[in-house]
Image 1 (cartoon, rainbow over the protein chains, first blue to last red):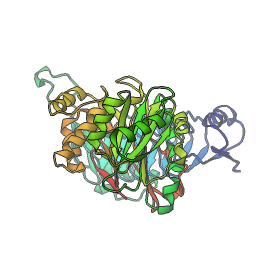
Image 2 (cartoon, chains in turn blue, brown):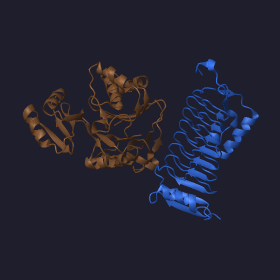
Image 3 (tube, rainbow over the protein chains, first blue to last red):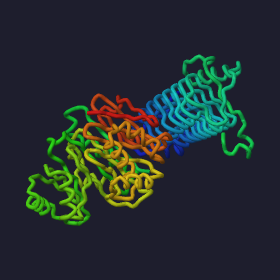
Image 4 (cartoon, each protein chain N blue to C red):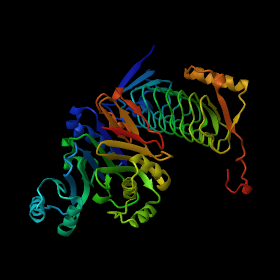
Amino acid sequence: MTHAMQFDLAKLSVREINQFLHHQLSGSGVDRIEILHPDGNHSIAVGMDADVAVDILGHAGYFIAGMNKRASVTVHGNVGWSVAENIMSGLVRVKGHASESAAASGHGGLVVIEGDASSRCGISMKGCDIVVGGSVGHFSAFMAQAGTLVVCGDAGPNLGDSLYEATIYVRGKIHSLGADAREEELQAADIERVSHLLAAAEIDCDASQFKRIASARSLYHWNADAHQEY
Amino acid sequence: MCGIVGLLVKREDFRERLGQLVTPMLDCMGTRGPDSAGLAVFHEPLESAQRRFGLFTAQVGFDWQAFHTDFTSSTGCEGSLRCVASHASKVSSIAVNDFKIWLKRAYPAVHLISVGRAIEMYKDEGHPGEIAERFHFRELQGTHAVGHTRMATESAVSPAHAHPYTAGEDFCLVHNGSLSNPFSIRRKLERRGITFETDNDTEAGCRFLEWRMREGDTLEQAIETSFSELDGFFTFLMATADRMVLVRDAFACKPAVAAETDDYVAVSSEFRALAHLPDIQSANVFEPAPEQIYSWTL
């Protein structure tokens, strides 16, 4: 049976709500939390480690659902910088747009941005999956090490610069690729991977229309003869 | 860090509430810039011969009334004066250069911080909330306003180093970021006879843009030129008598968020500062893209 709780950020501080989520939620039987009046506040629902659904009802600020484990956090609005930074598992969904560095350094789990993500989306991602319904800004997936970034719209300048083993799929236009990122042929396994992520993200898109971007791996070894020209 | 805020109201009846709406924005951004703050408010322009002179003095207990009487008797020019603490706003039809010459000779400790037919400006040291109280920002009326909360990183904390910066008439700029080549910009402008009040990087940016406009550029052309001439990080919010203009550098690592409704356009460093605005939940809230010029006209 669903046991829900509501918190109002017009009356409580972010710290009070987060302290409940960290220390009192476990064993309380609550499996659904609603947070009202986020009003751009930062750090709401960071450090979650519980099988719970958290709904943030409005626009939120920076670092929302950072370091998330297991929880399913939905923001019914936009978010500022670094949503789901260092996500470990679970799901973070933004119904609106996300500002810079969405899912930065994410290790696992799924991050869904239904609108646009801004620059540096998935920077240094380490194994999480990201699905963006709209477009991403410059330097997205910069130094991304593992995981998948799926972009249903366009990608800004320098996509996948200094990419390691993460894979990027873009449906729309790519402004430019960063150093060592290259387009590769889309295989059946890629289509399956993208289909699976789109289904998980509940975004309706034809997986066969995406371009696959991966690392050319030419930066893996230092080349002194390159004279820093990449 | 620093915070920027701006509000341009489209609805006539919001003009009398401009101060009430913009003051919480400035106060909220005090977390990003607690050491000093400023606000420029734009009014319906004065008639063409008149100017509003924004004045500041660091002298505690300065007698603004004596200043006003002295101005009238020594220049023979009529005018009005409204003073609030360290600041005064003087309206007169004296020629701008004549006023500058008189001020420098008669009151070297009073600084001219803004000139124009529309602009009125206050900036000082202290927490933005305190400054808003000190200068009664809530009571200000007008068509649009831009403000700044400063966390100094590259030059001293002083009233003169607070933003907004002005150059020429009815032009001001607030800046979140830092420029890397303000001194080369400054040397370039000084050779052309342009003088500086401070060693602040933003002043270099502000005077550069105003110089380009005096050379015949539109503000848009001046900004385009600045992309190659100004090195560093910036989110610039500018205002003229009838416009509010926003631009971010190519890397866009200094934040900005804009919210637009039928009644107003609001800009801030963070959405938090906009959350109290009327009907914000139905506003079009977006992040301005790098190197795109956003201009909103009255």
